[in-house]
Length: 102
Image (cartoon, rainbow, N blue to C red; front, side, top):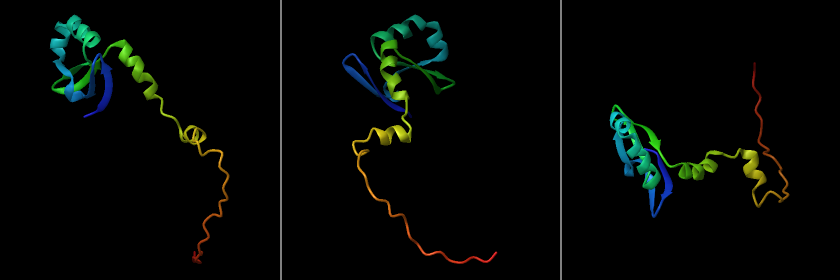
């Protein structure tokens, strides 16, 4: 089960288990209500054949999550480190080498 945190008014949703769940056919029949609840209350979970399929959430909540989707690469992480200006000597690993017959 996926965990996330979305501020929704005064409440904070921490996992899919806390969301109101709709079967696909019910969500289709009451789509306006699902959208209204997603905008005014919490994200809404829609299931297909009993399995989690999609989450409908307000656009402002989605906009808050977008920056979290960009995962920095290792170079970005290291260059942003407060320790990136340190200079150190790397002596390398000096281990014995054994002969191998081919």
